[in-house]
Image (tube, rainbow, N blue to C red):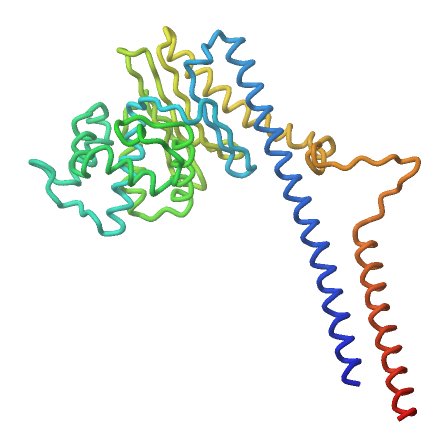
Length: 341
């Protein structure tokens, strides 16, 4: 009886192992399927973007572009790791770094910054009357310890992969901007009163020609737009509450018609967001379950592929039967030996 219990335990373990192997294989296939869709859709976005820029006479080498669909798992960047001077858009992450520190008690609004306190300088950097006050933003950066220190704090928020040049100036990259906007979006979804009062409300008061207000689950958030006439460049980054909310970052550098270019690219991002639903619907029947390079090929005339679960079950039964037979033979031999003795 003791040996029979051992055989039963072995049989159960074999069945658990077999089912587990099947589940793991199924999970792997599902993961491959998701990867196939993401790669395919990012490639589609890039093809559409390049075609759009060619059609509208936009210099592709002067453009940085990023897009992330929050609900439908598509993220894409064009020249994503290239640094660009973001002008007004830099106020976004600088303010957010201070907000996180204020919440964590590392700074307080009444601490001195020169002849003013942090509350006053912070609001001046964001509010309408001081929309172009680079001095206030610079004061916030210097008070924090300089660009290198505040950029380190930005990196700790997003954990974006960056190189040393990122820490030395007010430049950003599309990869960083998209990661930052995702953090900002998640904060906005579940935002506290402090977040509204310190980041959303001041931005709502920003000059209308550089601010668009959108709703995300009744929370007001913004995108920031800035230009540099001296370098013929423009930057726009933020979150749009379309039917499926998405973030974008667009920078156009050294272009004679930079404002027109950036407006066209923002329109492209919105239109792609709308069209993306149609693309996903079409893929329900056209996308492969796994990437083509991972598929096995069979000659349908001579070989039929047996379902994995059937193979697993049959193998388990055969092994269990073998163990049972070996046990019976062993017991019979033992009984015969006992009789001889």
